[in-house]
Amino acid sequence: MSKSLKDIVPPHLQQKALDSIPALSHFIVKKGKEYFYSAEGKRHLEDMLDDFFKERGKLINLIQLFIWKRKVN
Image (cartoon, rainbow, N blue to C red; front, side, top):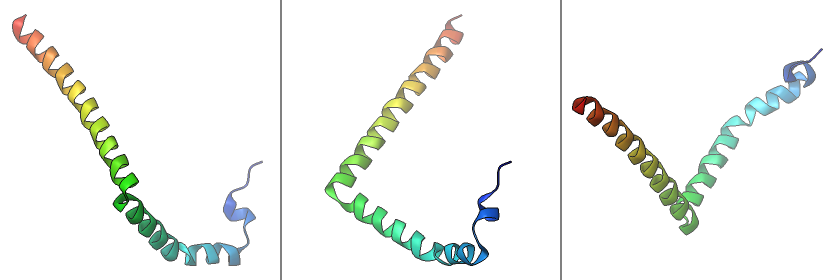
């Protein structure tokens, strides 16, 4: 029989976890901003965008190929 986390963790600890969510979310956003404003973060973001557009371009070319073949046939 499996138990949920809610069944295992005492209510006072559950409340403590819920109360810490705003501070934790603020911390995550702050660290994310620091990373993406850094040189490494900017480089990583550029690489991710380049990869996205390369893949998107392949998909668009594939769709155009199918459309062109349908028009020819």
